Image (cartoon, rainbow, N blue to C red; front, side):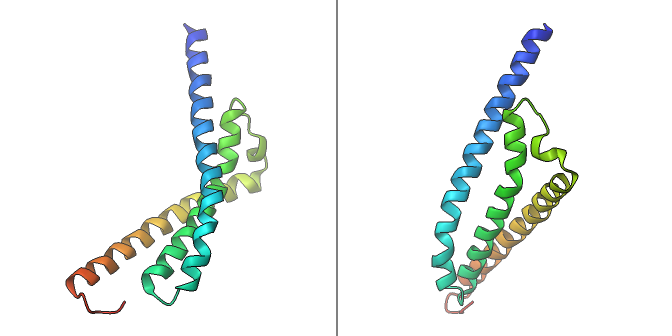
Length: 122
């Protein structure tokens, strides 16, 4: 039973690590492509929010990289052995995931204002 559970755990780790790594790589490749567009239109409030969301997503993805690599290497600490990288990665993930939620809430508020007052410039 323990061999089966170990095999299941390793398979799950590889599956989750692969999914996380694919997400990180895809996000790191595609998020920077949106930055020039939103930077060009940054005087519009919603475009500025989208610019901040893109930058926040990039920081979150960078913070996820060490754990993705760890999951693929049988949960070996690797990058996370370094205390500074471990703490910084956790801090960036926690802070910027909250910042991302706040920015999306701001985007929702801006959209609601646009619906209620259609001719108001935000």
